[in-house]
Amino acid sequence: MAPLIIEPMQPKYHHQVSRLLVHGFRGKFQSLTNLPDHTLALFFEKLFDRFPAEPASQRVVALQAGEVVGSLCIKGKAEANMKQEALSFPWRDFNEIGKWNLFKLFFALYFLNHQPQAGECYIEDISVHPAHQGKGVGKCLLQWAQHHVQENPCFDMLSLHVSEKNQRAKKLYEQLSFRTQYRKSSVARYLLFHEFEWNYMVWK
Image 1: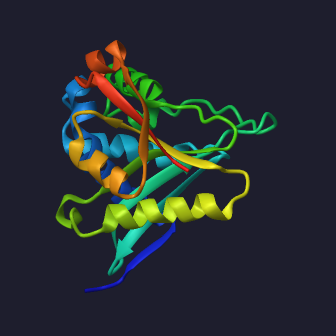
Image 2: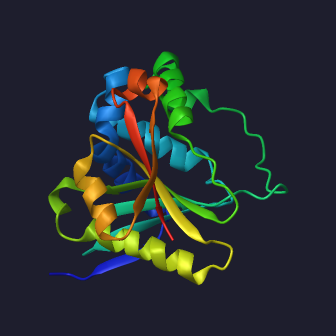
């Protein structure tokens, strides 16, 4: 079996990572729009192509034999002087998706957004291709994030949110010493994603 390699996100991986995000989060976004997989993947790919990542964010990919089999995005607290340049929205690039679907997708992303506090490194998303689940890819990505926190003195904790319904992921986090700091109920997230209870988990 080819070794697993983790490296920073590059434009050449946009296409594969976009489809990977569809595999991981199809249930959340398709409940809002009913968009087919290829159109939903196009939405993510256009976001990668047209909008630079936040200065405090970092995405990595897990590669096996040159194929993207997993991806993870982390972010820290943005500094006050980190200001992104205002960009006009490229509507033409998103014509296939439609303005109403765009509004709902951005609305959903807004409710999934979390603003880290000082010292907090937050896992925005982690996804593993279905054909590679159960093979240690997710564990390897999480261990990379833990090492990243250990190597950066500005961080003292690694955190994430996971739905109470996603017990498989929750058990993996617990195996890697993440602990639930609190559980919260969100009516907005239930209406959007049909998931009411969420765990905020922390590794220190």
